[in-house]
Length: 434
Image (cartoon, rainbow, N blue to C red):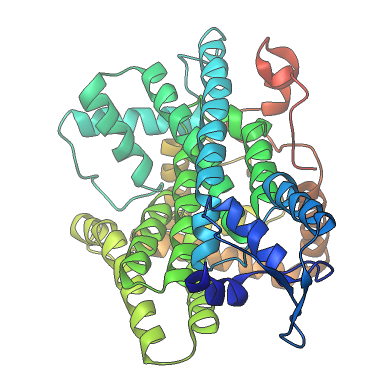
């Protein structure tokens, strides 16, 4: 007790001095199941003088504190301290396991219902494109004939599943249900370590019962994998900023690199995490070395995609070349703030790639490299913004309203229609965004 007392005094968040600091220490030590030899007197934290002998009333007060810290207190030790981590570990493990299995049961239930609908074995748009691409990889065509148009990680991950289990979309959905459940558990862990056990429990509950997260475990879409990798990134970043170990920064970099290969816009988190590193760890050489380790891990993870694009197209494309066209979709005459395509371009990914290349080459009068196709559509979007700023402002306002409301914009699948018309657990009173 005397050995721990100094560390306790530095790490505890004391809520009251009414009964003296010793009772607070005793109550908190009881959470650690430590053996308290004796507490002969009260202790005045201001004068450091011993007070009167402990009475029955003081003993009852100590019992009250012990009950409070065991039942109600969410974070009895200051976050990040050694004792805080030790004290939270049993409850955190219990919470994570409970969230994982609760989320898994719900997601597996939806998966089995999904394959009883017309959508189960008939993937649409992006899902069909990923499925066809994965089957091509399994057949031995590991490289594309040109630079990646869609994000590459998910089709290769899908091909790995097909290689081991055969072409079975239901197996894919079951594995994604496990990934989705892990995402919920990791989210509860990260939230607990940052804000306390009750916040972590609430985060786990929201993620477990969040309708879009449940839905996207079933189709062969990249959302579940991408979100799992981003949540894993949060876990390693919080560990890295807390413990300041280089290996945690490397793990965070690998997570961000893989997330970027799944969703290219995740790369925007790179400089944001860099700012966190320098503000949390100090602006010094050690922080620079940590960020360098993180950046190296990110770079090496996305390097295979860049090399693939250069080898097959002799063109520098960092990840894929759909970025310019995606920018145009949000900055054109057909833009309303929702998911609207120009009438001359197909929404089916393989035909879309052919259409945007054909139109770009027709208007420029020459054959274009993939990066030039992307640049063509990006410049076309910029010109439209310059010529129609008010329309673009109105579209941006609509996007903001759509983002913050309850309606899920249909993309590949109409989750609103499926939730209301298909007999699945999506009809339950689940959580949604707005």
